[in-house]
Amino acid sequence: MSRKRPPHPKLVSALLVLIGCRPAAPQTPSLAALLAQGQRAFNSGNYTQALESFEEARKLSSDCAIPFFIGLTRYRLKQIDEAIVEFSSAAACNPSMPDAGIALAEAYAEKGDDNRALAAYQTVLKLQPNNVEALRASGKLYLRHEMNTQAIPLLERLVQLQPADLQAKCNLASAYAATGRFEQAEKELEQALRADPDNASALVGLGAVYLRTNRTQQAIPLLQRATQLASNDSKPFYLLGSAYNRLGKYLKAVTELEQAARLSPNDADIYYQLANACEHAGRSKERRAAMERFAALKKQSEKTFEAHREAMKLLLQAKPLVDAGKLQAALQLVKEAQQLYPDNDQILYRLASLYYDAGQYEPAHQCAQQAISRVPSEWSYHYLMGLIQERIGNSARARDSFETAIQLNPKSAEAYNQLGQLALESNDPQKAIEEFKRALALDPQKATYKLNLEAAYRAAKK
Image (tube, rainbow, N blue to C red; front, side, top):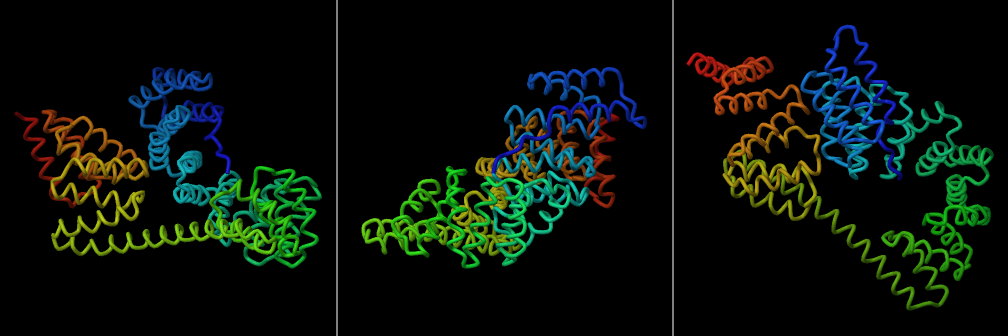
C-alpha cells in the first residue's frame, strides 16, 4: 500500500490561523512571529528552520497545535519516531484534534506498525465517523490483515460518502467476497467497471468472484486483461494460473504461476498451485522445487506463530515470580521470551524493567531503547528510560525522558514527581515545588508526593 504523507503544508497555515484568531487565548507578538516564521520555512521546504521556529514557539505556549506542527516538520525530516512522539503528544493534549490522529496513524503505517495505525484511525473515527481519510485507510489495513468483517461497515460508509471512489468499491467488494457475499461483491465490481472498463482492481476482483462461484471460463478474459494492466501485481497472475489449472491448461498455468512467484516469492499459495500445474504438465523437477518452497514457507510461518505464542506464555509465567520477588527466575523467563519474539515491545519493556529492578542498568537501557524505537508513543517506556538514565547518573537525559512521558501522558503524576526530585538534586527548590505540586494535584492521596513537596519548601527556605 502506498504511504500517504501527513497533511499538506496548507493545513499548517489553516491551523496557524486558528491559533492566531482564538479569542480565549490571545497570542503575544513574539509567539505569532515565531509561528509565522515556522510556517514560511515549512511551506518553502526549509524544515530545519521550521523546526527551530516551532520549538522556540513551544517555549512560549502550551497550545496543543504546536507539537502537531513540530511532528509534521520532523516527519518531513524523516525523523519518524520523533514525529510519532509529537503527534501523540498533540493528541493527548487535545483529544478532539483529528488531524493529529490521522498524522499519527500515517506515521505508524510508515513505520510498519499496522496495529497502532489502526488504533489511531479508530480514535479519529470515534470523533468523526465520516472522516473519509480515516475510513479509507483503516478499511485498507483491515483488508490487508484479512479482517473483512471489521472492514465492511467502514467501506460501506466510505462508498456512501464517496460514490465515485472506484477503489473503495473494489475494496468493499473484496471484503464482501471474503465473507461469502458474492452477489453484493459482483454488484460493486460491475458498477466500477461500467465507470472504468480498464480498472485493474475491479477486473481482478470480478475474476476472483467468478472463480469462487465456478464461472472459470468467464474469469479468464478479465484476468488476462488485468495481467496486462497490473503487470507488477502477483494476484492477477496467480488467479489466472489457478483458472488454467481448473480447466486443465497446465502449461499455461505454469507460465502464469511462475510469473506470480517471481513477483511474490514468499507467497506459499502460489507455490502450491505451481506444484499442481507442474505435476500435470509432466515437469517433475519443477514440481519438486515448488513443493519444497511451499513446505519451507508454511513451516516458517508455523514456526514463527508457535514461537510468538510460547513467548507470551513465558511472559505470563514470569508475572507471579515477579510478585513473589523472584527477580532472577522471572528475568530468565522473560529473556527466553525475548529470544523467541525479539521485536515485541511489551517483552522488551518487561525485560528492561526486570534488569532495572535487578540493578543491571546497561542491559536495561538497551532494552528500553529498543522498546521505545518500536513504539515511540508509549509514555511508560520513556518513563522507565528516565529512571534508568537517573540511575546511571545522566540527569539531563533523565529529565528529557520524563518530560517526553508527560508530553504523551499529561496525567503522569509519577513523571512530575521524578522531575521534582531531579530539580531538588540540582539545587532548584522552586522548580521542585512546581513539579511536586503538579504531581500532588494529579494524585492528592499519594503520601510520597506530599513529603517531597514539604522537603522542597524546606529547601527553598534555606
